[in-house]
Structures are given as C-alpha cells and as structure tokens.
Image 1: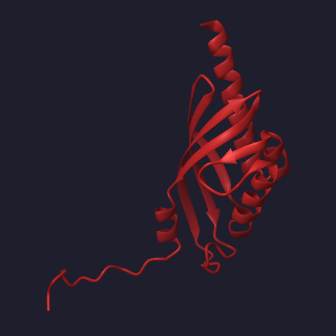
Image 2: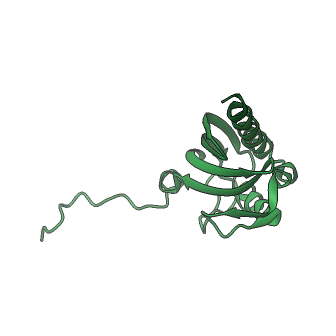
Length: 148
C-alpha cells in the first residue's frame, strides 16, 4: 500500500509540473515531461513536437493564458486532473479573429504515466463553452420550431 501511495504521489507530481510549465507558457519544459512517443488521444499531437505545436496553437490565440489545477486524482499509472484556464482572446482561434474577450474554460484530462513521464493523454475540454464566449454561435431564434 505504501509503495502505491509513493507511485501515485510521483505521478501526480509530474502532472502538476506539466501544468505549472503550461501556465508559465514554458512549452519546452512541458515537452520535456512527456515521452518521445507521447500520444494525445484527443488531437493529432504526437511526441514532444506535438506538445510544442499545441502550445503554439493555444498561446498564439491566448497569449496570457493561465491554468490552475482544481482537482487531481491518481490511481496506478493514471492521473485525472480538472483544470480551469483564463485568458484573453488576442489571436485567431479556429477561424475566429481576435475578439479581445476575457474567457474561462474548464477541461478534464486523464494522463497515463510511464517511467516518470507522461506517455498518453485524453482531454475533454469545454470547447463549446469557449466558442460561445467568443461569439461563435448566432443567438437562437425566438420563433418556436414549426411555426409558420
């Protein structure tokens, strides 16, 4: 039992360090915390270069992004984390020109740790909520469906 607690502590520590680097926009440090063949199952990102590309993608659109860990749970080689990000939309994001709007986004990530590095991840970001804050959706018509 003690050995499992130590392993869980080491695994949560690596995830915590990853998000601390990400919040500082220190993409090089974040990339150094993943394996050479890291797989992000929620995107096409692969390896350390994939982490660098994701950083460029997000930080071009949201250069002042800050990420905080809200919850962190570990079980064996898996670590689940709920994070909250705040940022200002200052660059193009998914075809939406900079709006200057301050946004909030929540995300749940699951990481698999291998040999003291992040080997695999699955992310569930609230992209709908983010896009809504950026004004990507037209307001719904107030006319009832099916009315003539």
